[in-house]
Amino acid sequence: MNNLLISIILTYYKKEMYIHETIKSILNQTHENFEILIVNDELSEESFKILEKISNIDNRIKVFNNKKNIGAGPSRNFAINFCNGKYIAFCDCDDLWKLNKLERQLQNMEKYNQEFSFTDYEIINDDNLKVNFREAKNNLNFTKLRNSCDIGLSSVMLRKSLFNNKEFRFGETKTKEDFVLWLILAKNGVNLSALNECLVSWRKSSNSLSSSTIQKLIDGFRVYKNYLQYGYFKSFYFLIVLSVNYMLKKFK
Image (cartoon, rainbow, N blue to C red; front, side, top):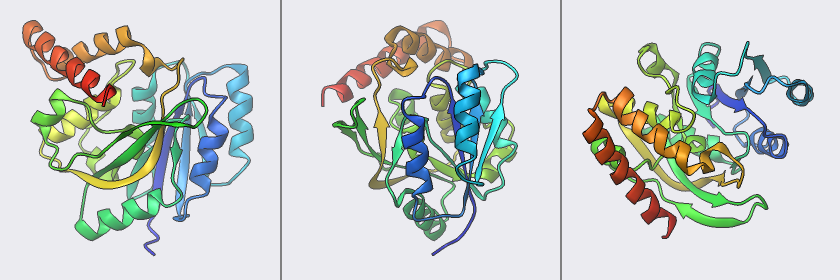
């Protein structure tokens, strides 16, 4: 089995109910050569205690504390600087990985010389019950991605060398910060390779920031206006397209 080092980045903000289960799903991976970088963006007394305990579970876990709350995107950008792996994977602190997630993705990426990989994922609720499913779309390019954000963050693994380009970074929006990076990569010709295996459980939590419809609409507009440099009318147009496609997926 390929034993390349994989760096795994998590950003922590008020996920005390789920993070232990998330970390367990990572530590149980069949591919064992990895490092876990957790960025504490909550910075409360409770978060320091929780993450200190977690860092003592396994010597592959490193915790970094932000100086102030900066959000998930900038926190991941910060952690990238400390990654030692050939590949970087991302996981939200309330999502779960299947046991062979890293192994299967690494095998596939090495075999086909891929720079960016994402997988199918199931959607679970607060009780870990499956409520929906998303298939990783093949032949996903910039034009298709611009109309519908079809990549789950916790399913992504990419080559660290991509970040040698300083423009390839997560956005600074409160939500959709990952959408910004995927669009930048696709626009610059990076092949977004789909692996059609369900290797991730993405949690749709009732109180998560990503559940805020208003915030997602605001950030969706910012993606087009600020990061793709579209005008107001063009940004509103693609925001409507994005929203319609989101609703269609939701009721599948």
